[in-house]
Length: 158
Image (cartoon, rainbow, N blue to C red; front, side, top):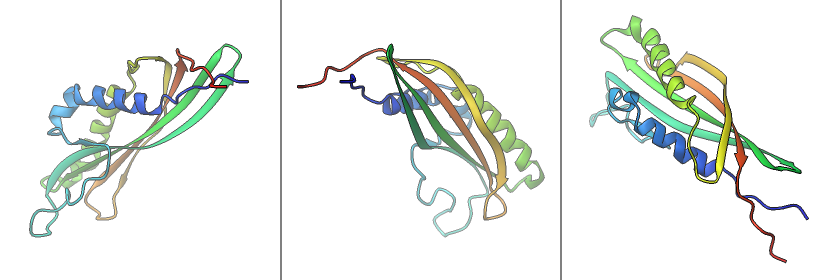
């Protein structure tokens, strides 16, 4: 019978969130890092678009497990969404979004520290900036894959 393992997905997600919370980027974007899409962040109390804003949503995860004789590994991908709007300087908005996305990439490419797991490597799969449906907001998308080794096995109950 094969040993059983608890996925590193939640531990990795928390470690990456902690990296973001302790980064200079977190302060620069006024601590707007979320693990869900915030409601009404784009609009003021009267329903108007907020003219200048930036925030990050740490979004979807995908996990692929590999069982080997020596242990258990996982490839865990996390998709990060960066939203940026600058109505004061709309022509600079895309360039600013690219710069912010590069800063986000720098933070999340660092090897996260987790109990019971070791991250061997980190690889960016996708980095792009698109114009969101409102025509003013730039939407940066960053998909990062983490290669994680398990350091702990759990015994099977017979």
